[in-house]
Image (cartoon, rainbow, N blue to C red; front, side, top):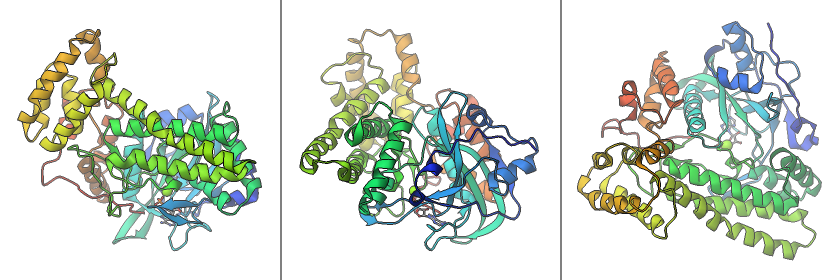
Length: 480
Ligand code: AMP
Ligand code: MG
């Protein structure tokens, strides 16, 4: 059996207090559910042919040569409350590979058994969240949104106890790193300046080689989050659990627990069952991004020789997030509306559309996709109250008349940013429910379709539809 991963484990070379060396805990009877072959190829992995060997590999029963398995330690603010000690409680990082294109990626098994950071948890995952992360993270990648990726999913052949007896599963996550705001917070809280400096150097070398010092890293992280959150909002994505341990320094989306895409637009939309006060509601995401970045700034302060001056500089940098986010978000909105030039009232026009969607029950994805079609008046069909859209369409047409792009170019540009297909919650749930009974066809069909979200196709009409009242899924769960 050939397994060859181009490992170079730089995180494992950091000081011992960054992690605990920990092998995945073997499972009884692993079975392969899905393998992302294009991603495996991009990473330069040589994989076994036999499906049983693949299952053993992605279950952690076989650890590839050159791996340096470990569980990372971190801390974080969860729903605003400080948790001084978190860490990979159900994940083991096998190591980092350097892909043929020179890029570096972590390969992590999620659900790989208990670690010293498991607290009361069993270290395992059940099938639902594993499939959910597989579907949604790959959909995000196809939507051109920075994200961790899904390399594989396996069943473990074991039962995990959640609300009931659920089938166990393991997810293989690929990330350009797993360095979180909470990783910095962990060392800052312990006043471990030496570790903090090592983490800073590691993070800069890995993600922002042009950045200088803590201020440079902060600036880069602010830019990356401003971009990321604007991209999320452009597809109606609600992360749902933007705790500081779930915000990466790389600017990739991580942690697909209770996330969801909106059907009908509403700025206050929340899906997560544990987000009682709407802290992580759709329109609150930029504010929370800034809040998390303020925590990063605070964690970087111990590295600054002149603390007072640094507080002033970092405060200004974090306050600058709002304008940087707005620039990203407004660019997203202009692109969604097919505007190739900028006018003062463009943002107001876009916000007016969103307000009407909120009032008229407009489906976010369908409205924008219809605007990108040959007959934009069809956007009204995405509204529960269609009459609300008509005056807006007139204003938009008047604005388009002043835009230099011709109709053909505009349509192509709009169709490249307004997806026809998103992973709608009811379809994700349906795929999970079928998989629990052993039927993976809906899961495979959904992931295949979501690989081409900007392409219209008559065979996926049912996946594009917004849910009927009976189909609607209103709550999502961390489900770990
Ligand atoms: P999350 O909500 O997924 O960001 O996880 C928060 C923390 O809980 C992390 O430290 C996880 O490692 C830990 N955790 C979540 N589920 C489990 C589990 N089943 N077993 C052990 N630790 C877990
Ligand atoms: Mg997490």
